Image (cartoon, rainbow over all chains, first blue to last red; front, side, top):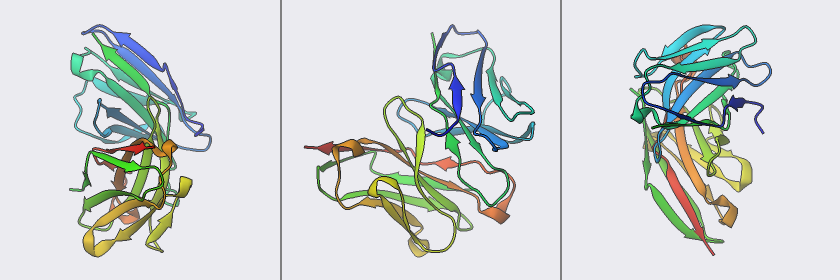
Length: 114
Length: 117
């Protein structure tokens, strides 16, 4: 067990709706990264947060947004859901300082858009 | 730009046989290299990583990988496969310490390992 917790584990939404996914990072970790993993694919980097600020973004539209809170937990928000947003969303926590490059992943949230 | 190629989307071995999963990367500077395993309906678990130092790294569950700079490879091996090794395996890279602030991981497409009795 990594100590990274994501909620909910499964979610079904209708096209056009909005969704919020949550991630509690491992104790002591100040950086959270979000990834989207479509079925049969490798994870794709969405964005990363370090100390409550966005610290890099992948090739995702602005309707994908995030937050990081003072306790380093994080949210991923997706507006105007599309069918292609159906995927496993993974949260990874790590230390920003360069002595530790390991990221610990949560179990993921399986989002289905119908 | 960095990229990762995993040769073979599906690999099937017999129980007790050698496991070899291939990973090649493209990067202007030697990156940090990782292998992760993903069991069905689960998140990703780190198997092993290479950052600096010894190029042969040992991980959990009897897996090891060797960083070969000249071949830009980081192949994953295990001498004897177990049924419990059946899973999806992902190779990933990230920029080294001095290459920028973004510590995102860039992933291969994954290799599905099947272990036959």
